[in-house]
Length: 476
Image 1 (cartoon, rainbow, N blue to C red):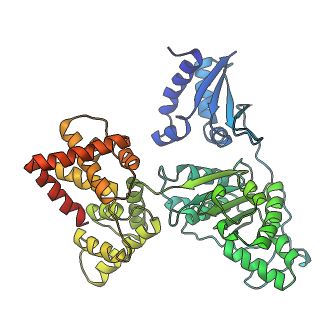
Image 2 (image 1 turned 180 degrees about the vertical axis):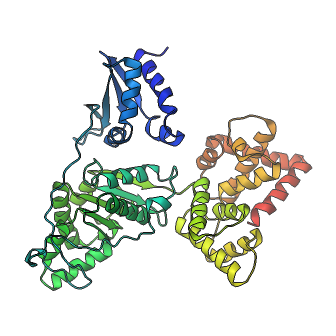
Image 3 (image 1 turned 30 degrees about the vertical axis):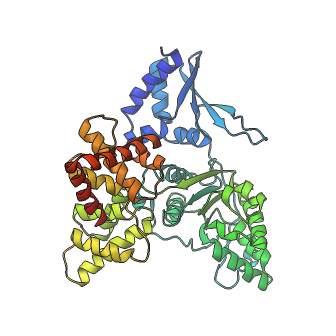
């Protein structure tokens, strides 16, 4: 039986669901829990400061209308934020905040022009008569939010980045650390945030710099006896974006100067955005005092994109390049290259170039030839997604049915065959295979493999299915 506060919130959710997109609903309202109703004040629990700020920024009007509809004009909303306790305890504590519009941090900064070149950095304080800092942001205009495809793999990082770009230095995400493997879009997202900040706040001074360039500039400043100039320049920025922060590992002096720059920017309400190939807890050779500061804000990871996101990335790339490909070719590329967005886009460009130079039509056969050459120097394994597609095409089943909970005989058999080939042809764990096949556990995968082996020994027709499928999967 629902308690009063749960009933009120569920009624609110019905209204909210009709007024926001399904994706927004799942991201921002599904995780919320109603925990108390007292004196027309409904208390809802949100998982982080990030959620609180995002709801207040984007959905406050909708929430107020909904609460007043359910609780009357006296109805109010209160947030309960579960936060980590840093005092040697794993027990969380709660911060209660009434629903109000909060004033953004007002950044005050001294701004003077300075020329940052490859050689030395001049002291901004000794350039007379100039009152504004004039810095090339070093941002790539093609790396914008418009062509950054959102999926489950990057939703948190993208949402946090967008929040930061609207209110740099004025959110709980300072610093914002974006981490993930090679080619998953860290640099693209960092540039997108910088570009959006420049568009939204044209008076902000934004600088994107790689960690290697930062270190190189610092070495030059030591050689030229201008380290104070170097430090003062970076302290004048409103937004500092440093890419591949893990390359600071082992560079003690560079870490030391960055520590002082970081502290100054953070204390004066300026925004810091960092990218890394690993989370702070896994960074080796970086001082603990820096690592602790990296954890002050939000660390958001970028994961390997799922099949739908990979297809969407290819479609976006084709749209921006003004080209069209057959649907089966697009799907084949997305199935074949699964772990690296940069390689995926590179394969698309290579395919188009090869077809153009050789005056050939872009076909699935040409795509297969190109993929074989594109990855010929690496041992390539098929993906679970590709195996599932081949099996579903063979038995004329929609892939959604294969991943569903249905126990229909033909679907169960196709699912077991997909599990069998996934175990045979990939390095995925049994748990991962099961997760791809409708959330099954490892025991179910083992049972499926045993069943397929037994049927191959006793059923000639079934064995012919397996032989045909093995050929179709192997020629990818």
